[in-house]
Length: 232
Image (cartoon, rainbow, N blue to C red; front, side):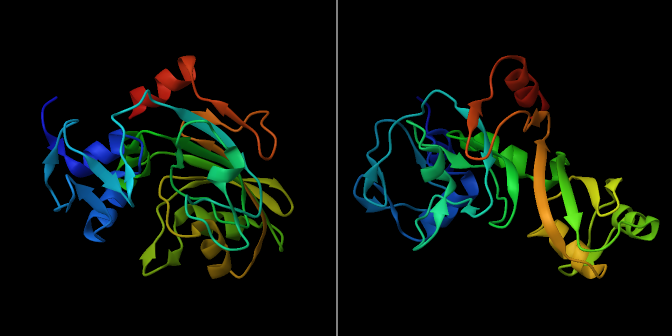
């Protein structure tokens, strides 16, 4: 194979995203032929590559999973005392990791993969990929509230992008976002004087939660997978 950048190699091998690979390299936990890796270096399958002491296998067949993350599960590959993470919940026979995050108090769809290129492209905010949520708040959903959410809310030293928001019931609405700021919906609601009591992600791009139940997963394949990859 032609030499490729180490972060891309780790991503293609299903270790992590390119961004996370850069963090691992900078932290000195990646060794190439017994020597700490340098940022930007290129490697091939002939190199012996270790991440946290574990050998990296060559690129695997691509896996994409749609997972129903229950409330209380954290979207990380790291073990935290007293917390259950999404990797252990799914217990997939191949190494996969979550694409992005869904906070511990929320539930619904999270995509998982062993292919970092997909994760990077889905998470890149400049691509304006849609994510849809069902949200309940502790106050009535008014027209004033809907208009404020649609037009953009000042949070985290920025203003959120205009988005689609539709009322479902007196205290529940659907919202479609094209960005992924930290705890964005909860912060938007807090900025408008209310609190989220229930949050469920229904869709990521063309992949929908469908009939999945909490803790269940399915492989994204066939036309659904083709459409997802085509949009990337």
